[in-house]
Image (cartoon, rainbow, N blue to C red; front, side, top):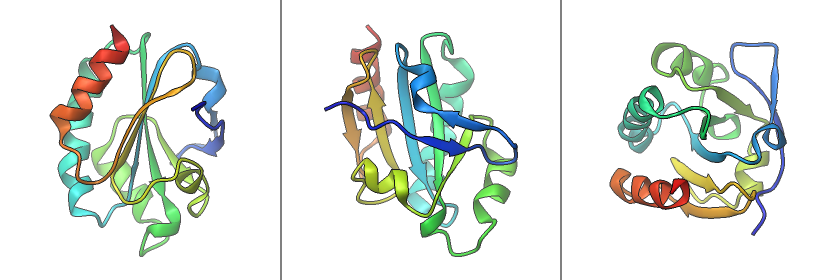
Length: 138
């Protein structure tokens, strides 16, 4: 299935991001909320990955699902404290719904052809996600 295209504002920036600008790269999206314990376990591992991988080949983005936050600016506060990855603010749950996510964190891997290569829900373990990412990068 082709990955749905989207444009979202970046958190803590006046810029926006369009998915189409990175088609041709492998793209890893992580949908999250600040209050989620599974996100608190998942995101630090992905931050370590972000710091070490080749950013010319793989684009990593996190997407704060604003429509599932309990406090309006909670995603911005969390991003400022914990994330170096480019972080986008979903408009309510628009892109989250577009990708048919069922919970947070949700991870989507998009291949170089713009197809959804793999999608994982909140119970996926990090190693499984990394194996899927590795198979798409090769």
